[in-house]
Amino acid sequence: MNPPSSGQCHSEEQCDEESLPVKKEINILMEKYYFVYIMTNKHNTVLYTGVTNNLQRRVYEHKNKTLKGFTFKYNINKLVYFEHFEDINEAIRREKQLKGWLRKKKITLIENQNPEWKDLAKNWE
Image (cartoon, rainbow, N blue to C red; front, side):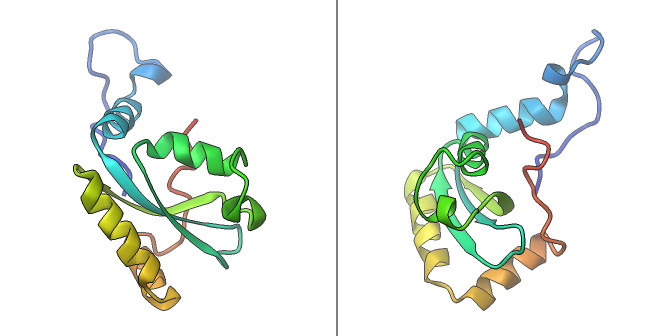
């Protein structure tokens, strides 16, 4: 579920980290969409579902424990699933829907897209 990348720079200039297509596409996604996401802890024992308009910032906040509460208490720091929406109301509806699901159904959703439960934000700054 990572943003697509062409693997090439967008200009004739030498590539640097800031000009990599993946980074640009992530930034574009952050500005245009709302995200519903699922995060977990190191051992995948606790699932947290949230909604945000800036996924990269929100994941950073969880990983760096800037937010006290559930995710702080249970050491939620691994992004395992996300969806994007153009309409905030659709995103909120989806978040509520996922929160109402049993754990087993959430696990199936995650494993259909991320069977190894990799941290989808591992290389984000």
